[in-house]
Image (cartoon, rainbow, N blue to C red):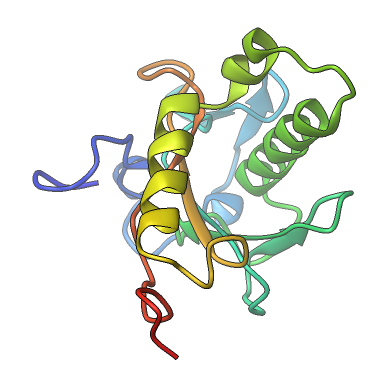
Length: 173
């Protein structure tokens, strides 16, 4: 998000442009949803694609917009911040259900590379794992950042990254 950062849909800006700055999506009047929580339809007929623009963090810290998957993975929704403040928010529901689908495929017995690559950018995950191994990142399995691109303007997959939080790496205590 931004000219010198990852090229990802800025869902936070899309919501602001549609309903105004400092407003939450679930506070807008006359909003309906279609396609399994993936599209917000505003009272004026404008639509907001809710399938991308998420910065997710898999960690064990407590945060406001957070959920736990069936396998016990704690996921924090870092961006967009204007999703809403409750689990009733449709965009929150969309990303929660999507992450659960990803986890279900990952834990599926006999999942193929093709099945995994429908949901996951495997190259970015391999690169991130190599980086974390190379620098001996103690938090490699406890703290990971991911982003989800739009199904409409991007590939719709979960990508590993941003490279973040290396305070416990390179054999540092």
